[in-house]
Amino acid sequence: MVEVSEKFGKDCVLDHVAVAVDDLEQSVKTYESLGIHFKKEREVVESQGVITAFASIDENAQLELLGAHGEDGPISKFLRKKGPGIHHLCFKVPDIEAKCKELQEKGFQLLYGEPQEGAHSCRVNFIHPKSTGGVLIEISQRVGDT
Ligand code: CMX
Image 1: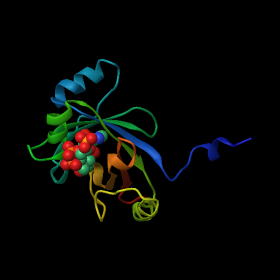
Image 2 (image 1 turned 135 degrees about the vertical axis):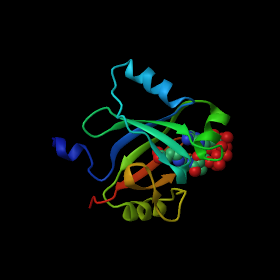
Image 3 (image 1 turned 120 degrees about the horizontal axis):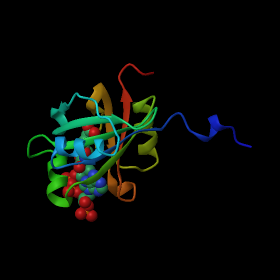
């Protein structure tokens, strides 16, 4: 029988589910009416053209609401093209360089040659939705984690 600790890999853990929204504060209210509590802080990530709001949904995973910050970023484009909805899944990894190398060797198309700065001082990269069957996947390493 497989032990619980073996069933859940430690090298790729769900970190957050991200939802693109038209109106960040209105969407926070909508999710809070479900009983989800958002942190008060809002973080602008200039390099990604986003403003974010986070809520913990269990011990590990968060819900991230993503609003467009500026008109040229990927969220602005996504909202114009598809409208609001689920934008990406993010998995936390212990060593983003090693994971990127492994993914490239397996044929996944990564967006960046080097990890970029993401929300919460994380280093992030993305797998293009064309190489995952239609889902944008972020991989993330928290700075300071080993
Ligand atoms: N999920 C699934 N499919 C998506 C998608 C998404 N989030 N975004 C785009 N696509 C699809 C499009 O529908 C399109 O498909 P078709 O060719 O079948 O129409 C295809 O991918 C190309 O889309 P596009 O509109 O031409 O967009 P681009 O190729 O210019 O950009 C992507 C797509 C994924 C490269 C871009 O969104 C990107 O760079 N994303 C990574 C950065 C990011 O999303 N940052 C924001 C949040 C960061 C954070 O959490 O802090």
